[in-house]
Image (cartoon, rainbow over all chains, first blue to last red; front, side):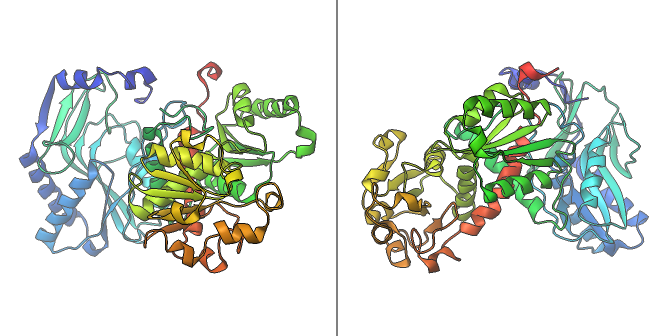
Length: 207
Length: 310
């Protein structure tokens, strides 16, 4: 499992330097991300009959700016005013059993009830499918959605669970050791975004 | 970095406190859901080992554990049969053999949680030991102030009452000073520890001076048995000098909040009409206690000491 990391590796003072110097390549720049999200918005409209039932739910942190962008796109192309929620999956993870330090929690904000809505989960990078599994369990604790669909900006494809991604920005085959990160070009997740693949031996950020 | 146990605020650094508070803020969202339960600690066992009775704190830990899906077992040995340290540690060893993932300990004697932690593989959380510390109370107080004021840095906090015998005061002194607040203590001189200023606080024997410009007024519960004789002449005199009512509260800032760890002696340390509703945040403290204890259990339960790992 990806989180079997010695505690010493996490507190390694050279870690940030090592990541910075690791070879990395930009696989999606801001323009490509915007285009992908416009295309995905069209696909969502195409594949759903009852558009008023849609509810975008972002998986933080990477899913949050993507879901906002998707909401803007859906407003422009279909005149939809959709709720956008944020659902942290940390408390539902299947890898908390170890004795290591616990991962930080992120904010959950679900502005509308999920009952009878078609929830579109939005994540930045899909890989094993474990995060999506956790997100679905979390979602069910909020009610009974009529359906659940999944958007991933990047699909790495190393699936370990029978999870299907309905809307993919780009399939990017990678080695399990590489990690794929959505990040803001000016730091944080504000402003222009990019997706980079880095070959670092450390754990991935949100696979 | 937060260690295996939570024995006192004295052992923690500001970054640890901030991490616990941030986790607790996230946990509050779970308490607002229809289904107030997450599967995080499913299959884990938390033992509430209370040698000294405390329905409130024990219930708060119990609800916190259950909201995280842990199995919570309450164990309250009669204190009469467990006065000797050997039998306390024996009890702890017996419990440890049942492989709990966290043990929450309260005891009337300072230092017992630490002694138990020394023989246990499971993390120990101090739920109050003698006049030593009550770390989760201080943390929930920090959380309450943070949410009321938006910050702790630079605030003035007045703690009023029996500072000498109060583990709540001690933990809060450590907590608020580490988070950058100015802490004042006030009470009858026999109830102010001689060396209290070495903890970085200012001591006052006048309530009015202690409250002057305070953002937070924290009233402590006074033990009635201490009010007759040695420390203060009478309840009436204590109440007149150090009890808080709306008139005396005017010495503090206009937007000052009033806190109390409970249970309140109404009419003694706080006037009847001041204990309920604004500017008192006593029930918010109780509410925040559950989220705060969820955060502590999330961060600690299941983390055994390295020597105990297979």
